[in-house]
Length: 485
Image (cartoon, rainbow, N blue to C red):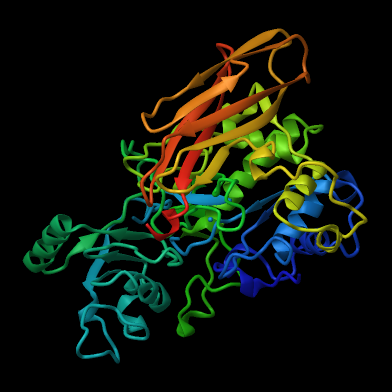
């Protein structure tokens, strides 16, 4: 696969001919193949490529490429996409990271500084509407969010938008900028009407605690996994709304044709392409702490150290946020990790009906499906447990798992399971006692129930705790009709 700038919804994030892009292409195409991570200097790939439709893993170049990267000890972090329909999600009005030195500047209404403009949309600051000679060094008030880009193009010092609400995740906010609610906008308009020479200043944003956060963005793609129903997707959610980020000086900060010569060093960006590098950055941090850990151990750590999110504020629950919201600090000391290797993926692929011929084409080697029971995706040693069941029929599902001790030498872990009246969940054994580091212990999770209604999903959680570490895994049961909910 050729990684081109056109694949990226925010071209300013990645130079067209970057070294990272070239190295990523080597991994994803395996031509020429990489030898070891250290040989090429790669431990983590952050890749915000998107596909319009989910593809079967046998023809999905991203899945196949990520598998080959995993073989070479490289973790690949993908975005879930921004279709709102999954694996990294975005969670989160304009944030102003700059200040105007406390000075006040002339404040002008967009309709007062227009050149050639649509007479039926005064004040909207349409593209090409503002007269640069009238707005330079001033703050412009527009009636539409997109007017901020026009104000920036025309050379305004900053912009204020009444009734401001950014609905499009791809919209880039040029700074300094301010979005007003209806109440504050009424006060602003009253001030402008009562003052001959109105002036204003856009203050640097202050951090405030939002009790509703974190909330998954509406544009962020949702599960379930329509290719492998037994694997929960997305895996995790991370910050992806209104993120102040460095921006390429060779890329325009807007999509306006009249603004191609403009450039900015920083901008406020949103999308899952923004949450993806947050996860990759923490993964790189973990790799620096544990250079001998496998990609699956890093992934497990990211997923099992997340704080729980509120399903009442996020109706899609785990299909919206996966295992939870990324916690960089807590991830440094996970206690236990779930590791998944090549043989595990081969067995799962064969259980999905892929024969040895398809397996070889997909993996690029002489792999064969193992003899004996085929198993299922529930047997993949994944940090989450997911099963799709038939509506209104009794069900029982078993999840064999193995964890590796990376916490204390001598430590007993006890299973803590949240409750839901619709399902029964048990772990056997209930206590895992470790006597050394890197020791492995296995257990089997059993989930059963009398039947779920159509379009229903139920989630509980498993936490292995030794009193210091809390290793959390989501357990999700949903009906085959959930996709139509």
